[in-house]
Length: 209
Image: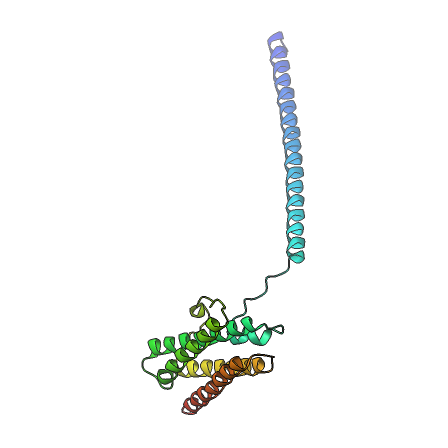
């Protein structure tokens, strides 16, 4: 082997060694980078888990808001009634019935007994308004449109309204058990009796289905 061949062989060997060394360095760098990335992902996952646990604990500690009670349903759930609260529940329920009947007439046309009873509900609202004014109490805003049940047909509307009258009667019976002035008792009694008549009308109409 001559001198040139020796030099060429040495140069080739050196190049191979350098190439192997660079590859090893690259593998080490990649390995280190993967390890760092894996560590960061583990820490991030752990932080997310801790955050979720904290949110769940806060959710468990925070009490759920009480449902908004309205009209007869609210009155039947309220076991510490003042006279002003009774007035409020009563006018809310009369407003709700009036709005419910108006909705049925608009949605399904001129339907008995809704077309007759709706005028009675307007009178009931007027009678409760007299009591509010006599006892110098503020009349609550009419929010009945937010609480009506939108029936799919007349039969369902009759059923919904019959149930509403049952609740209305139960509400006034509960009020009549309280210690209330004679004029308030007379109004509650009259409104209760009228609702009993409305319930009969709805039940008779339901018998046709």
